[in-house]
Image (cartoon, rainbow, N blue to C red):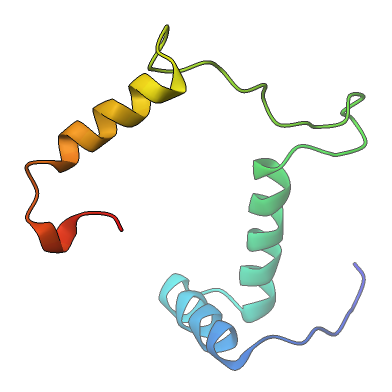
Length: 88
C-alpha cells in the first residue's frame, strides 16, 4: 500500500468524516471506497481507441417551413400576450 497526502476543501472533509462515522469506516477507507467507485463509474481512457466527440446534430421540428414562416408563427403566438411581455 502507498501512503500519500492530499488536501481537501473543509466542507468536503467534514462530509467525508460524517460518512465514515456513519459507516464505521476510517477516513482512509472512505476515500479508498470513493476512489474505487470513481474507477468503476468511468471507463479507462486508455482502453478507448476512438477519441470522444459529441453526437451529430439532428434536424428537429419545423420541417418544410422557411425562416419567414417560422418567424411569422412565433409572432402569431406572441399576439395573445399582454404588451408588457412582447419582445422589443
